[in-house]
Length: 200
Image (cartoon, rainbow, N blue to C red; front, side, top):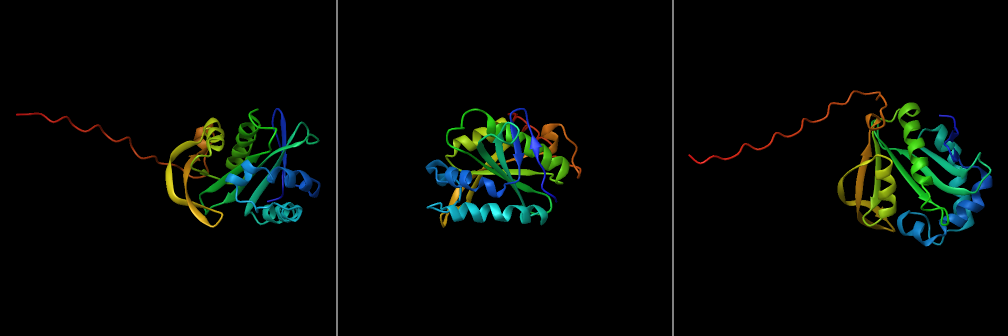
């Protein structure tokens, strides 16, 4: 797929460019990002350079779609990043971080909404997965505000710093956003209530 740009009321989401390297480097040195996101520690300028350089090929190979999230028409500061990675023929997974100083303003929820709609309408996604380490309440809050349904806990579901950790997992379907799916979905019927026991 060729890289594209998305816009929302306050944001411009476009694939990362070489000019983003200094801001990506600055953002990913933040302790809160390093606590939850598997970026190298220490995070060096060459790590940001390597990440940004891979973005165009990942788009064209349809393996990972990364967006730099900027305020305004694209000339504002880098406030966040969102990525979508292919997880098999019927699922994609979303991941994101918000730069320090831009949290708590709803930017990430706004960006996730835009990326999810794009994934369902343009990227062939039929199930969008979200995962976060247990305790990452900020990520979970964004997911829930964006409409993800929390489905449970995966034991040893994520590797972080060479250690397997439990994680929350949730999912968003096209129907959750009022969109059609490229595949039909037959949900399980609701379980019938257990019949009451009668003495007799």
